Structures are given as structure tokens and as C-alpha cells.
Image 1 (tube, one colour):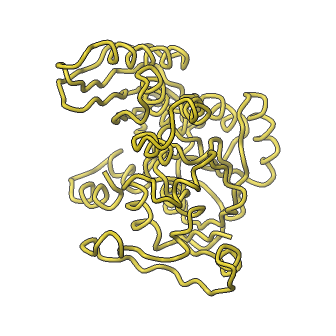
Image 2: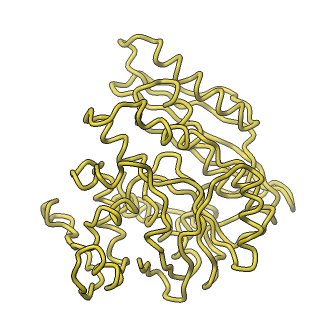
Amino acid sequence: MGPCDLDAILQSLPHSGEMLRLLETKDDAAVVPLTDDLCLVQTVDFFTPIVDDGYWFGQIAAANALSDIYAMGAEPRTALNLVAYPMDLDHEPLLEILRGGAEKVAEAGAELVGGHSIDDKEPKYGLAVTGVARADEIVYNRGAWPGDKLVLTKRLGIGVLASALKKELIEERDMMPAIREAAALNAAASRAMRQTGVHAATDVSGFGLLGHLAELLDASGVGAVVDLDAVPVHDRVHDFITQGVYAGGLRANRDYFGERVTVSSMRAGVESGVETEVEPAARHPREEPEESAGKRPDLDDPRILALFDPQTSGGLLIAVSPERLLALFEALTAGDVEAWTIGELSADAGRIAIR
């Protein structure tokens, strides 16, 4: 579901307690105190296949669901399978999906304790995950400060590559680096940020890098400056976007979050070859035709559109003080986690500047 529709639905529901906090901060998981110093952390996620191989789909879907626990600085303890599958199809692909998911849960040190299945025309798989964390180690969306550095732990573009795969423009073996990265747990990155003492964090998933960054900004009351050249992207992603190969979710993210994005005149000049001033976008009515909705030449640049690409099992996006940046990278390196500093936070609350 796109961010606009989801926000409208959630705001119309009655809410209180932890649900009210989640609506305000858009954190990745619910936090329920068990004792004075121990909290239960819960999340759920499932989706349709983004790759053809059942085993890798199971691995990615499980890693994606577990990621919300890691983004909160918690440790997963139990998981429940969520399965939708056409029962008139051969069962072997489903067995591979479940095998991939079970192995990923075991790798996380959690226990698979059951689940639920339904007969559905389109396969879907994911997990409901329960974790635990000490109250003083939980990392929320809120808490970031102006001047904090932004660190990202996985490349962008898996959504674009999945679209290219569906259109048979790329073969699965040619996107295996992206598949393996999507299937990798964010466990070591989570431990690194707990050891370092970061200010805030989220993971990058369906709303893309800029969408999840926007939620962190809103929760913390800060803005951000993103260095476009520093953002890591998988091979061929920009080329496919140039050809118009990307999911509808990318357009939805651009149209919803794009209004708060400003592209510097220097950046616009570099991309177009002409120095131009770029005005902030105004939100366009949803009833406008798709080809005209949210139209801004700067946001339609392939390198910027990649920042809106819906990610499946993306990396952690971490806000850390400049004084602790080196310590964070040392901890990430010790955990064999690749990471990039992609920008910093500003006092321009809610705004995202791309330079």
C-alpha cells in the first residue's frame, strides 16, 4: 500500500497507547514494557515474490521481517510464518520458500514457533517476529540532532531490479549480488549501533530511502542534506530507471514525499548541463493522470528517482553524532558490514535537500 493511502487509513482509526506513539513516530516495531528494564518488540511483514527462486525469496522475506527488530536495536526471539499460496500449484516451490525462511530465522538465533497459511491466487510469505531489548538500548526514529551524520548499510535499487526481472530484461543470476545483499541480516549493523550509542535509526523498505528518512526527520524535528554522489546503488539500476523500468510504488513514493525535497541548483545544473534554480514541489491532486502527477524534471532524474525506490530488506539508516562516526564505522567493519556516510541532518525541520 502506498504511503498516501496508508496514512489516510491509519489516521481514521481509533488509537491510544503504543499505537498512538507509532502513528506519531512511525517507528519500525511496537515496544511494550515487560519489566522496568526489559521490553517486548513486535513486528510483522510479508509480500509477494521479488525473485523467481523460492529459496531466495524465503531468505529475503525473512530477513526483511527480522530487519524491523534490528532497526529498533532489539534481538529477535521467536517468529511465526505467514503463508499465502495457490494450492493448485506444485508444492515444491512452497517448500523451498519455507526452507529459506527457516534457515534465515535460525541464522538470526530466533526460533520458528508456528504460523498460519491460506489458499491464495498469488504467493505471499513473511513473518511475525517478536524480539526483546533493554529499555535503554532501544533505538527509535526520534532522537536525531542537527549535525548528526547519516549512515546507510545497504545499496539501493533492489525494487528496480525486481521489476526488470519480471519484464525479463535481466536474469536472476545477473542480479545475485543484490539478492545476496537483500538476504543478509541487519544483525551485525544493529549490534554496531548499540555498541556505539547512536541517536536514531530506521530501516529502508517500502517507502524508499527518502520516505523512511522523512519519517525519521518528522519524529526528530530535524531536516537532512543528502549527498547524491555518496548514496550506493546497485549496478544497472539507473539505466533501468532511464528506460522507465520501475514499480508503481516508486512513483507513489515520489509523489507523496517529493514535496519536501529540494534539489540544489548546482545539482540540477550538473545533471542537465544548464544552471537552473529548482523550486520545492507542490503536492499534486491524486486524481491527476499518472504521467502528469508530481512532475518535476529534477525529481525525474534517474539518480534521484532511485532514492524513492521501494526496497525489500534494505539496510539500516542511522543518525550518529560526528564524534561517534568513526566508532560506528569501526564497529560496522568488525561485523563485516559495508556502510556509507550519505549526508547529515540539519535544522530545517522536515525538509530534505539533495546536493
